[in-house]
Amino acid sequence: IAISAGAVLLLPFSIISNEILLSFPQNYYIQWLNGSLIHGLWNLASLFSNLCLFVLMPFAFFFLESEGFAGLKKGIRARILETLVMLILLGLLILGIVWVASALIDNDATSMESLYDLWEFYLPYLYSCISLMGCLLLLLCTPVGLSRMFTVMGQLLVKPTILEDLDEQIYIITLEEEAIQRRLNGMSSAMEFNTVELRQELENVKSMKTKLERRKKASAWERNLVYPAVMILLLIETSISVLLVACNILCLLIDETAMPKGSGGPGIGSASLSTFGFVGAALEIILIFYLMVSSVVGFYSLRFFGNFTPRKDDTTMTKIIGNCVSILVLSSALPVMSRTLGITRFDLLGDFGRFNWLGNFYIVLSYNLLFAIMTTLCLVRKFTSAVREELFKALGLDKLHLSNNARDSETTKPSANGHQKTL
Image (cartoon, rainbow, N blue to C red; front, side):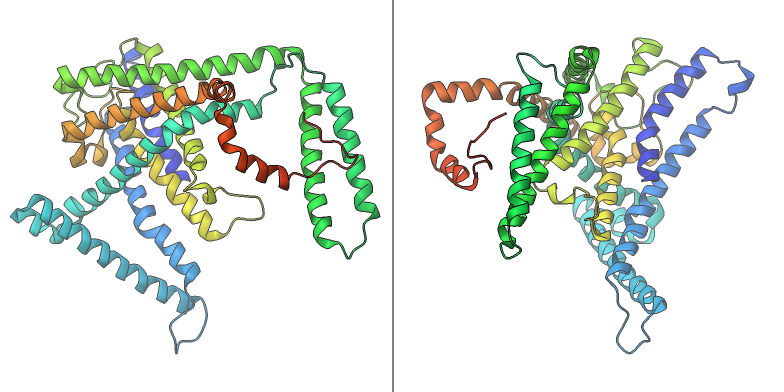
């Protein structure tokens, strides 16, 4: 998690450092802030990301699964020995796969001899593959997260109460809670299955009652000002992100310097990389953090990764390791994605700028186009869902789902007082 936080903060720290050096070039108290320090931080982030991904996380997983070799005395030493052997075998397997893949792709003598040059070729090439996988994962998660952020913030904030009587709803939910409680008290221990269902229903009713009471206790400014302001802010940030990606697509078509490959531009503190100076740099930092949060939200919103979501008192160590690896891959790919999409013009430093696929014009252009199209489609689908439902009802297409609705109605039981209430 610490390495992930460092990878996320790489670009924001570098951008703000560049603007500070431009604003105070001769200040004695910021002489420690220089290009050598920034380059060193980027190299350290790359080094420790490699260490976590290829050594520490696999070691933790194999150590949890190990029991020790047969014939050895059971204990920590036997488990560590088995873990080290498995780690070495995994390293040799990955080394062989990457060496063969690089030899087939490049098909030259240097690629064939790259097995003897691990530090200069193998690790950067392997990290480049991991970064490409992370960028593809971000391409899948971020558009979903950008549209999902509106729902998440709507659940965290108190919505305005328009034409709603909260007192009546609380009164109804209180009656339902008391009725369920009376049924539980009157049941015998033999009806265990029904008791479990009623307890689950009681928990749901209590949760709904808590939400209604929170909405009632919220102040007027929290209900009527904070919620609309946050939604407008999210919409503005999302729109700016899509506009920046669209502008970057145009720049890629007419200007070769828009490619993220290489760092041949001015050094740190030599020129501002933002059009609007310090304000533009602050906007870039906000967008980078916004994209990271959206990607995490989108990652856990996908059905394929839904089981990865940590739950209180119900998260195994294997799932924790999987979450750490996923967050590390996403955070390590964030600087690359931000530069590829044109969110910032700050050049990638260290091993981040040596990725081979960043020099491919078609990959970079396709990445930008897919991001813009997927984000637009997710937002359109999000904001038109209510309109589509009403159109389906008007055209009678909602009757196509009668079988699903009938099945849901069978599983939905009436409330304890004999009436089905809808809040």
